Image 1: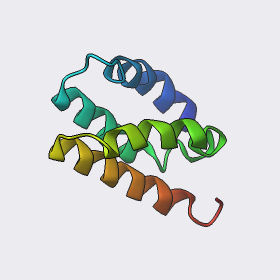
Image 2: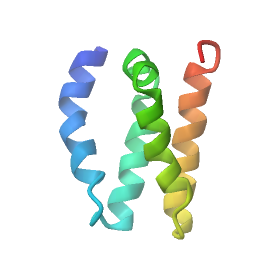
Image 3: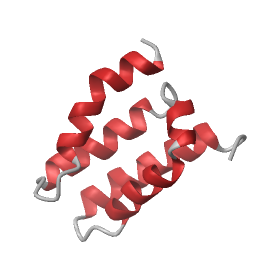
Image 4: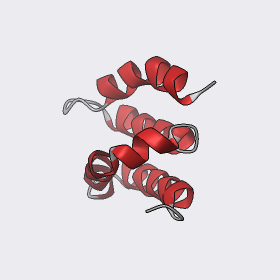
Length: 86
């Protein structure tokens, strides 16, 4: 799948999981998905880097250890993909 197809399929799911009333399991799923699609969606993430960093920073500040870990993993994957370019 290409970047556009991936974002079209996953975008609504991520939007749903970003809601403030999402459970910790949903937040973990959101961050995990972001990490998993980071390489495929490299160009979109690079273009919207500030938005991605803001999303991940919320998870990193979470009091739930599992949410924090998922956000850190997603951040590590994103930086691994974007490191040479950012």
